[in-house]
Figure 1 (cartoon, rainbow, N blue to C red):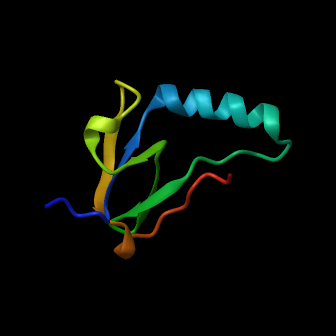
Figure 2 (figure 1 turned 45 degrees about the vertical axis):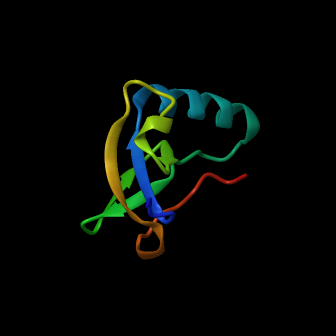
Length: 78
């Protein structure tokens, strides 16, 4: 049985560029990518998924994985 609280955090340079282009057109403030804490260090990510098969960008690399109830991370504002 799959753990419903497990998440995978991925970073994609292509996605980062796409997100920054969209955010730049919507807001005047400086845009920051969301982050996840890995071994005490903040790392940017562009996609959080429940399964690696759900990735949208082929150039994605895994930044972190774990139970989201025990992890520190930020999310994009809606």
